[in-house]
Image (cartoon, rainbow, N blue to C red):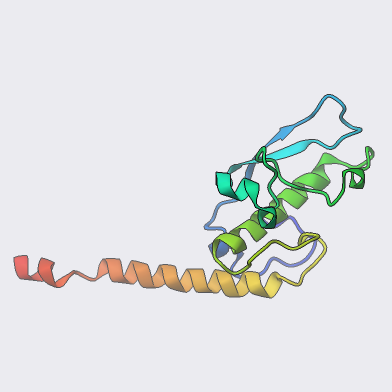
Length: 147
């Protein structure tokens, strides 16, 4: 779940809920002159997220991977885009958790500035999950009275 070339932040698994990113890759007719499109399948962005810039999702549901159309080099590998998509998944989870108001401008592939936030948010989600599980395991007063 962490394909980046630096240590995985503690709490990442809790932030992502143990789920990676499933994508569909669409190679357009002009490939490799134009980049392939990456469509997140699981998790799939909500329709409203495809209309708001801060989610880095285009209107057709594909990920916005580049600042400009000319940022893609036909010699680049699709593997680089897949790594960017995996990093998008982490930022998406931070957004869904309310830890970010918008995704970073250049992504987190080569920028470690969100690593501490990933750890903190993951720990908070782990703590919340532990509290919920503990509350579910305690019998309710009504259940005790029925016995």
